[in-house]
Image (cartoon, rainbow, N blue to C red):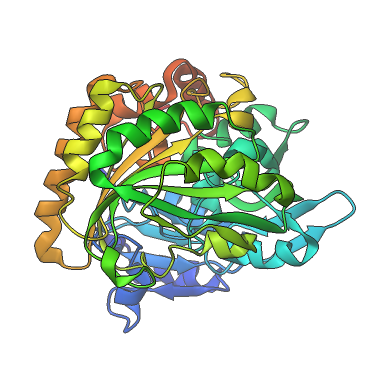
Amino acid sequence: MSTSVKDLNESTIEAFASSIRGELVFPQDPNYNDARKVYNAMINKHPGLIVKCVDVADVINSVNFGRENNLLVAVRSGGHNGGGLGICDDGLVIDLSGIKFIRVDTSNNTVRVGGGNLWGEVDHATHPFGLAVPAGIISSTGVGGLTLGGGVGHLSRKYGLTIDNLLEADMVLADGSFVTVNSKQNTDLFWAIRGGGGNFGIVTSFKFQAHPVKNVIGGPTLWPIEKTEEIMEWYHKFLNNAPDDLNGFIATMVIPGAPFPEHLHNKQFCGIVWCYTGEPSKFDEIFKPVLALNPLFAHVGEMPYPAIQTLFDGLMPPGLQWYWRADFFNELGQEVRAQHLKFGSKIPTPLSQMHLYPITGAASRVGQEETPWAYRDAKYAGVIVGVDPDPKNADKITKWCKDYWEALHPYSSGGAYSNFMMDEGQERVKASYKHNYDRLAKIKMKYDPKNLFRVNQNIKP
């Protein structure tokens, strides 16, 4: 059993406060409710203390304080996690949002990023140099959470997952020690954090390989939901034979409103959101088969890479109700397509949707044991999200999401991308790491034997 912060004596708290440069936020403070909010408003937890760290020393002192006082410890970077695993009840939240810095090194196209940065901030810093790091599709996502879970996004087929572009990290371990991990130093930890989540320590600094990406050609194409089975069957064959330069995730969705034309509003669609990084002069030829399918709406054009990363930010602001379920898939067979048509035709709220992200191309050419990400042979990371601003609709979006997932799960590969999971229990975590789980558990035992870092998709020592 963990100790509650409110059970600690005043002198213990005061000694800790004197060791911290950042802000301490307690339940009685006026900014407490804002400080405890996370992206998913369905999560409503009340930590005993939030530490807004501003440097590595703050992180070290916070870890030591949590361990020595037997507190439940949660670590927060961007707060985007679907299951709200950056926050906890009664315990200590180590908030990294004040540890922000970005340095682009054009001599080797690398980027050093603080543990509290958001991906939009990274894109802003790298874009003037014509560079980008593969990472997600929403710019307000935290660098830390997305990276440690794997990192699927618009550039996955061209440049791999975010973890495939991680070169080095600085970490604070459960015993309060500070280490640097890379391909030559602390190699077991370096392997573990590339997909193993926040189980092994707190990353205060990341070093990434960036790639030449200035502008892309991208945007959505939409077909009536009735064409879902036809489009999915075509998409599977087309994309898996397309050059790595072309990425596109397929979705069942409702168009909620602006900036889309009015005649599309509140109708269900099967959509594909494209991102092409290749030679612009070759795009029209590559894209011909897409237009031959006569999409009802096609808004695909050249844009700066940060623009496609922010395309959905306005539709998905912080503070909505979210319920997530996920699986990996190898095929989009007849039974799978039929379920997507069935549940895509009864999406309960305008923001609820299903996405299938391709993990083919460069992402598939990394060995199954080179990183903890155990599903390099899967074609898609699928996710279903029930989303709505109104808490009254929480049950409705949750039921639709669960029913959709249960209908598809028998046809899945068995596990899920950890960043797309709620708090679903140990067996689900094991299934998501497959043959790599035992190796992760041994590394966890070495560096965190008492499981201090357990508010996550937990790998038990």
